[in-house]
View 1 (tube, rainbow over the protein chains, first blue to last red):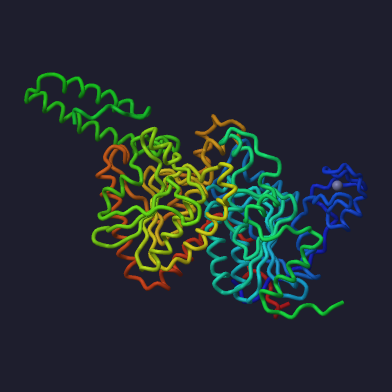
View 2: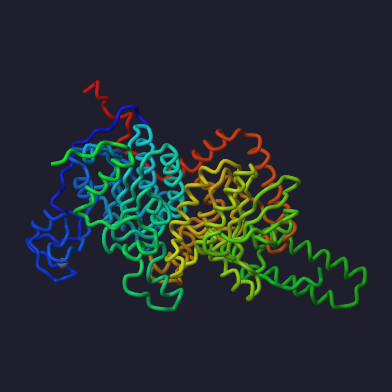
Length: 287
Length: 334
Ligand SMILES: [Zn+2]
């Protein structure tokens, strides 16, 4: 790694290019059916103003919500070279190109450093619109670099998880990213630095079975699907329908796997308070 | 030899023909001439098998990996270790039967032993849950690894599982957390770890006990992010495309050696490990012994650094940097 950091112009929350909210002025909430004014939805951090349904948010929006203002993006130039020359019904290269075009990212994560409520922090946010947020070699390398950078700078790490799991098209190399990132998190842990895992809808497969579950704090957004095996695979295995709410945040909270379920609008404040306790920083001055 | 049952895989047809011939001759009166012909045919069988197994397709390798007579973890335990004591339970919830842990002696070296056990007959398969481990299996493995660290004994790991058990109870008891914690803690465990994928290296369920200073694969084992059938049904939307998926996923030992995922391929007896458990065990023992000697001679911080770097580089073969730092203008030159 070079001794200087790559610096890029900070990104302000784009007008929602890649999230699932359709373009246009009005959006219908899939949960309560309420017709929402798109601008209100964006102002409310993509949370339904009526029922608090959490719409999916893209990686850049995540960063702009969590960071105070400007932040530096790192390792944005890393790109998969399709190490397996993988082709299923269409070449993986084509899928990559399409995702790069659609998201403006080279892979399914943005790694950045900045300040969270004044605290220098490293954040990696996953991008679901990029091949289902799947974890391949670039996600593995970006996150590992982010963790190593944080150890060097004595910063806490936050990873916002949103992923269908390991990327099949990069085969066993994808699987190994679970090991690589977890090893780096081991070093962060032994360095006494905080790691907060933010689990959002959906977080499944190899991402759950590695960094998503290794937080000092595992914080989930409400009603997010969080699990190792997918619900359909489980239903095939046990030959039964799964009960309502199985593998949702509240279920995991009840089973002891999640520290706290937090509304997105409270997320930054909750993380900031936790970091102040962990890092022994003075609490913010009363307003 | 004449009592050996004819059990060949579909691509071994020419071998099966010879074996039938041998069987027929063995039933006839054994003249010196006939004994000599049988011996000749048997050496031809070995030769032919050797030829066939040199050029197996990835899917044919999967068939060898999944052969019902392939040695299981407890077969290796029987042949490789003395004074074996099985240790049960995670001290939290229960005892998982798909992961076996224990202690014993390997060539006079005290070691701890961990591995998936699939089971061979129907009753055993059910008891072992077909090698699909539940969270308590991974937690038992971690408990035993921590004990190995405490007593400064190496850990020998055998990997052979289709996957972690994808059932409701696994989710309820946090199989993802159990695997994740093992990944982190095995990376830091201060004692040598030698891992061998002996059969199916089935995604996270395999990786959850497969972090080590050395990771080897038996010649005809596999190591995959998803079973070929699962990949075929997701990406091809047709489980019958398993042959194509197997090829695309690059899950064979030679593929993974080339991609720096594993350190070494351990030879199997001619025709696969199922042909001769004793020889397969001897070949594996040689490799484990060699790596163990190297690792025991290293000081622990070097060993841990190398273990970290080994996993740290995984995936480098698949990355290009479009903005390499060296090509960037330095702040001073702007
Ligand atoms: Zn609503």
